[in-house]
Image (cartoon, rainbow, N blue to C red; front, side, top):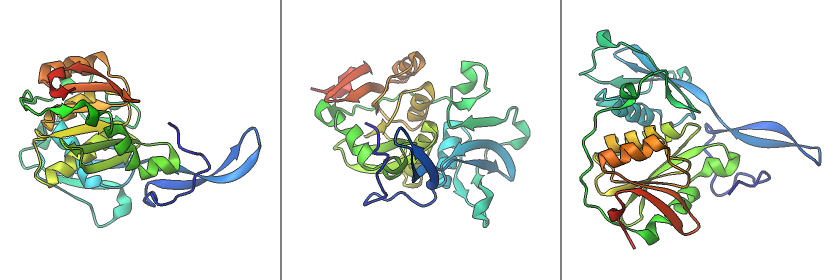
Length: 270
């Protein structure tokens, strides 16, 4: 479902830092109007004063994003702090076990492709324990979660330009929802929130994403210890392989009362 291009910011008003007003000509009518687009800006992640990553993201919840990214990369963060100059698009991460001198590669992430330039699959994979959670989730709840996620997407409602990730309890309670131009950033923000709330590992929770299921999103769910990951879109072959290897229940095409369960289907109760 696409957002209404004429829709004004209403009861689900987007945060001012996440949507920007622009001029648009609507065809075929030829009307000139003001519209809203998603904000995209770079964020530099630093550890010990040294830059380790740059990601293109939607501003907001930058500390959560940095923590979630560092957790996914195995950098063992303990905290994140914004500089006094918030316009600097920079966040500082505390990671006492990280040795900057041993940094052999730079990270570069973009809103479209996730982590880029790593070459081999082995360079992307982060060691994560197999998820052994015995959590079971009713199918009737699974098919409701994408709609509940959509209800929390204020900036998508205004712009139509953002991905989202939400964390739910096994009973369907929304714990956290985050939006971003990068699907991987939205996931990192949720994982960073869970870290700050001392909820990791997510053995009794469900992650829901608004788009497709990539290898990287499954990787992040595995690092967070989440047993169930669902999406309205399709998974990739590597996403299915990783979910099977790490014991994660992967549900794709969750829409209109149906779902495809690709791995660990025993967790979905009919």
